[in-house]
Image (cartoon, rainbow, N blue to C red):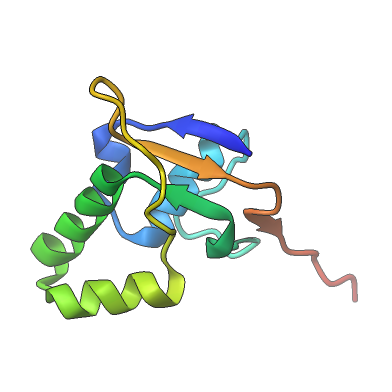
Length: 107
């Protein structure tokens, strides 16, 4: 398990961008629209503050409802089980296998 300390602006984004931000902290070069990498949402946990920033993004940028954001997190979001610290609110804990690199077909 690796602990990643994030900046607030790295959390105010859609889930796919957030996952790419976390992957960059792990040493992966993952562009925002990359299709060679997939993320296993079962292998990442976050703090409540990270959840709030992602939710805020969906509500403000996309005008999504609380229910829509909740359903998104149920389907493909990280679990909100990491404790915060007074000076470190934006934390993700990542297990091995979070970033899955797709193999290219050789035809």
